Image (cartoon, rainbow, N blue to C red):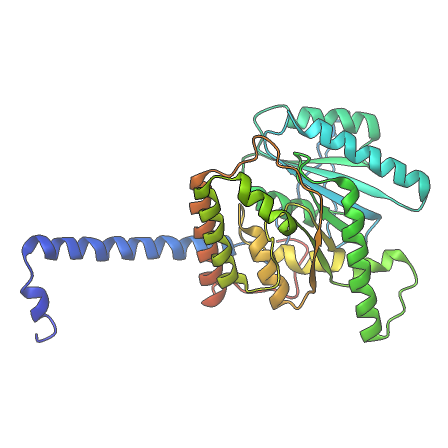
Length: 346
């Protein structure tokens, strides 16, 4: 009774407000716990294997798995949501570069995977035009029925890739495709370091994918220019976000959100089955997973252009902060397990 006496002395309205706050807190906690468990479902596997979208045939063929033997040197994964106004120019620039590279190096092989994340416009239709032009072996469309988020789209595309190296790039053309060579060189450097430490002899470039290494494109060198052009409140929000990222993932990566990242096949096999976040902060979770799995990460400065229509809205910042909380809670309380022996399917 002595412990309850302070509560008994409270005014009825104050006591009612306190009870309401506690009830709301319990409800929010249960909601977050349920969300954490929901995101844990399917982790450690590739889940449902989707079918390819082929405009010239009614036959249905499933995508391969990242756990299968690689048959391409480079896979380019391009998540897209309502990108009909921008994806065509991005694809034209990308194909121009890739075809020129094939002319110089006949052994160079590639594939482009467009992951249509529930678009309501003609994104898939435009992709079909390129399939008709270049063939299904070179460009493929993975269509998600409903919008699940960029993280979910990238995860699915990575898990259905055939390349030794896997590049994630945005459909809006904000990055310069030729900069992939910078990431490629950084990957090669990481592989050489691994080779030196393990005394392993890599006899061909296809062996590159067997070593877990990651290279992130970075816009950190453009930060001063960005601060000068953005509104003050956007700069404040970004500073707060970067602080939260530091608390969750730790130091080491200055620009976690750049949409230009390269993974070796081995790194992708370890990282993407474990990826839970489906939207904005999946990049931060990738950094966290790299540290936990001891996969080396390096940053490379790239050319970047701000594209109209690519602005992050205020409510998106709120969602990003919530996702960072989920990462901290999920792994901190061991609700999210890191699977090291990922399976091919559920």
